Image (cartoon, rainbow, N blue to C red; front, side):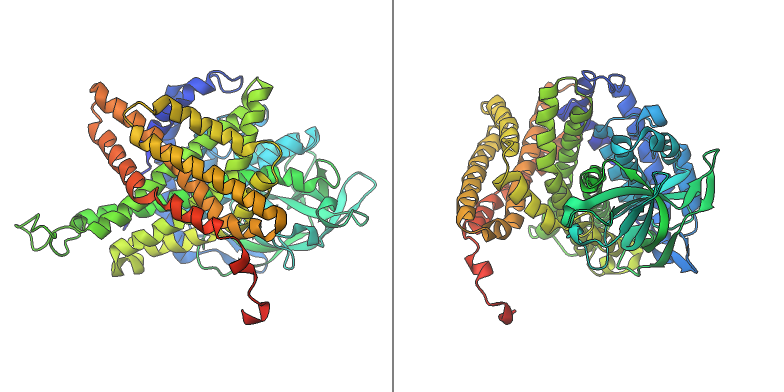
Length: 597
């Protein structure tokens, strides 16, 4: 049986040594009290929650799954009790608004916690992260009355929340939705429509479920410009704020899925349900993007977490499994065979998993610091600059973490061979659970198109320029240091990125298809460079720590440098071939007649 170990030591390294997060947080009202001691305390307690509360239910949740009977959804045995314990610990409101009962912790810290949750038990974690994301949207856009009525219950975990976007005929193209909301004399709306693929739409974990639903008024403008956002409770709160009358909301069925079986994926029917406007009329998509962007980063963390869980199982197995002899002669002549770690290809797989996982963890925390600056920094120019970085990096984080996380799950399965294909070691569940992360919250192809189109080719705010400034500042600071080899490659790769960007921008002026044809490869190119940026920073810190010779964690830093060098030599060079792929253009993609497919 696999045993998950929360990567608390590595998270402390990223937050304290690489990003120096406590110094940044000390500069901002709202996060000034989040010092190193508090950060460590939260990480350590979160690790215990992940290891001892969530992880033990993961396999059982997959095997039993959610059950649907007459409109009622029952989660796997143990989920309800675990969710109550989890909620009572204040974890759902960890980053919530303190005015309404949230803990007010920074996103920099929350991303670490969410990674651990997702690694330990993605199905159970989804219920919590959806409530956190919905709470953010309500806190940013809802009326004071709605905030007072719903946020405290959501933060304390006695109520939960969903995000209702998709309809059977309208997935990514939300402008096609048919759900309608009719205004009433008392200021409420009656909402009618059917939504599909609604995570946590019905379950037995909480006493009430709050749905954030996209719909249109009867006279709304066509397309996405006519979408509004509504809050629809399963039970309408009574005069005391407790769940009262049942609203006209019901679950029609749950999906039978490849993975994530402990997470209820529901068809939700709204039959004239009483609802309340969130934000302004016809501005619902902008309001919902507050939640969507939160969830996109969080789903990225699902890929990252599951990839790390797969690595932990695979590396442990490879150390213990005896199979074959080393090419240079027996390493353990007293045993019938050497461990799997003597084989170069096994090491390649493990190092690939680890290099991507640790770079992603650093990048996630880096994005977290930018989000904190957006919300807490007193300087408007700093907030604006950070917002540009967040907008640029969010689609990369979602797609890169989930693509490479899924790859890590498959590689981890491969390391175990046949034992990875059977249930005993849990690797096949990791593969099944990780697969959806590339699809929901906007498919990774959509993330790539968003990056290549809105954030780069058609950008007028200089989003990419802000990132380039950060990378070049690091290169300048380290060009004569002990990681000069890293920064030299990083500098070359950055120049190739800028040349490739200009190539796509110029080509797209004559053929709009160039954007779509380049997008996935461009996101891959950006990821290779961003991971290289993170590794250069981590190796720089690790090298200085070893040189200081004043710590007892020598093996940690030596491993960090080894994995970083593997990334530099074996993975980073791919940026050259990816750039060539992009420069090949769109003709070979778009000119084949549709009838030939």
